[in-house]
Length: 133
Image 1: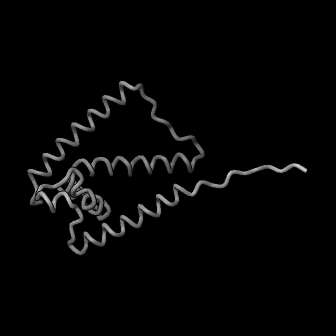
Image 2: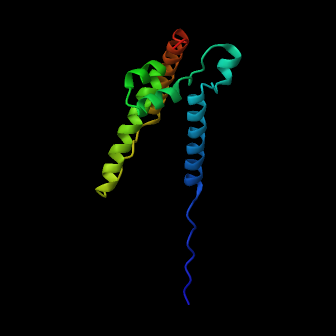
Image 3: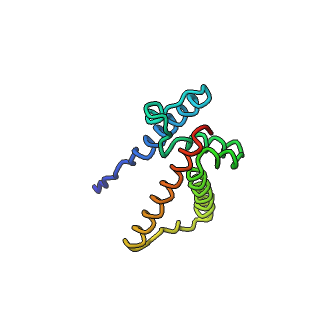
C-alpha cells in the first residue's frame, strides 16, 4: 500500500487577508465618524509620514484622484501602481501566463530604497506643510 503525505494548505495568507479587511473596516468606520487614529499626530500635532494614506485610498475608491493627491501624494502614486499591477497580474493569470518577477542587483535595490526614502521624506514635508488639509 502506497501512502502519500500531502502538505496542508498554508492558511497564513488568508489570515493576513482577514486581518487586513478587519483593519480597513475599522479605519474606514473611524474615518467616517471623524475619529483620527494617528497617535503621533494626537501627541505632537504634526502628521506622521502615513497620515492621510487611508483618506487617499478612500478618495481613489470614490474616483477622486485629485483629492487623494491632496491627502497623501506618495500613497496615491503607490496605490495607483498597486492597482495597475493587480490588473495586469489578473490579466496574466486569466491567460495562464506566468507572472514576471522583478530581478535586480543588490546595488539597484539599494538605489531603489534610497529613492523611496527620499520620496517619503519629501512627502512628509508636504504633509507637514499642508497639515490643515
